[in-house]
Each structure stands twice: as C-alpha cells, then as structure tokens.
Image (cartoon, rainbow, N blue to C red; front, top):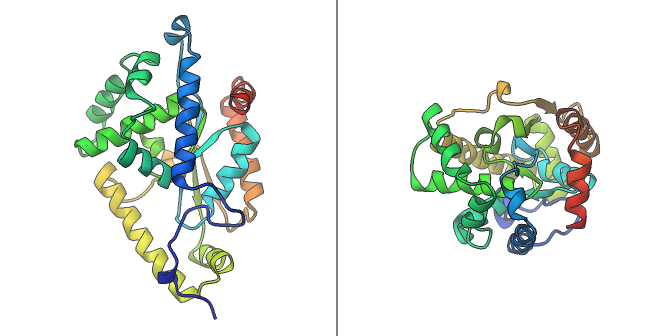
Length: 258
C-alpha cells in the first residue's frame, strides 16, 4: 500500500535525484549574481539588456522542474522555481542581489517598466506585488534564467521571453506522482485539488486572472502526448534557438564558465 500524502510535503522537482535545498540554491545564485555584477564595466552598463528568458507555466504535477533542469544543463541557464522565488521575495527581499546594483546596470528600468505594467493591466497594486515583480525583473536581468510558475511571463518584457505552457491530464500527473512518491492515488488526487486551488487563488490575487490563456504563450505542450521530459526539453530548446538565434550559444557559454 502507498503512504498517505499528508505524511509527505510536496516539493517541486522531487523526482529521481537529490537536489540542493532552496536556501543553498538561493545562496549560490546570489553569490554568482554578485560576482557577475562586479565584472560589469561602466561603459557596458548603458548597453545592457535583459537576457533571453524561458518562462514555464504549468499544471502542477506535470514535471516542469525536471524538464527545466534538463534544459538548463543544455543551455547553461539557472532554474528559479516557485520555492526559490518565494524564498528570495520573502526572506532576502533583493538584499544581496541587490536592487541598487540592478538599477546601476539597468538605470530606472524597474520603476519605468512596473509603472507601465500597472498602467496597462489591472494588477492589484500593493507592496507585495510590486516587490514580487521587481524581484522577477531583477533576477531576469542579473543572469540567464529559466523561471517556473508565478506568472513571470506576464511581468517580463514579452520580446525577451519564451513563454511555455505545460499541460497534462489528471491521470498523467496522478500516475507520475504515484510512481515517484509511492503514495495512494486517492491521496494524490486530493493533494492536487488542494494545490490547484492555491494556484488559482494566487493568480486571482496577483494578476486578476481566473486561468492562463493559451494566447499568452509561444508554445503549449501536452505531456500526455509528448511523454518524456527529454522530448519536451528538445522541443523547447529548438523554439528557444529560433526565437533568439544570435544569443543562446553565447549566453549559455558565459553562464557555464561564470
């Protein structure tokens, strides 16, 4: 018999290999970003622009972190999932990244872009949302990044984003979790319903949206049909190279050696 889901804390990316903790990854990324910022020459600051960014939106349980990890190794990007972004937003509050350093590299960009964003879209305007959006913008500007969840594709400049939506059936993600966690399927289904409600609440509160529209994305992949995470990563890699043909190889190489 499988274990009960209430005995197990759901952690995105819990699949076949052990990963560093959220705090460890965050600390590593922040140190890398600070190191990169120290290399920036004053003459290069004005010419800087956001790195091409991959933003995954997903149905919870589809395997987005596993796919992102495969893709990240191929192109030399960092993966920032819900837990890492939440940790940076709530605990670090841009501390060591820092907002001052980002403003030095991209003068006035956060204030200018968020002002335009709020004027154009009916996002609830509050301190938490502004800080969350600024964190997304800062992370995207400080290093080549793959974001998972949190609607980052709605915040970052659309011409610098490859927005990918990963979907699947309830049966697909139930089977996937049952295999990975060895948990009874009924318990998994109840947990998925709980997580779906939390995800819907977040999008309603932060973006005033009921659900993700397919028109928001460059690419929508049904993982019931594209079954292996390696296949999905191959498709995204191909689209990424087509959307940003002159940049992936250079950026990936810099990220791997930085």
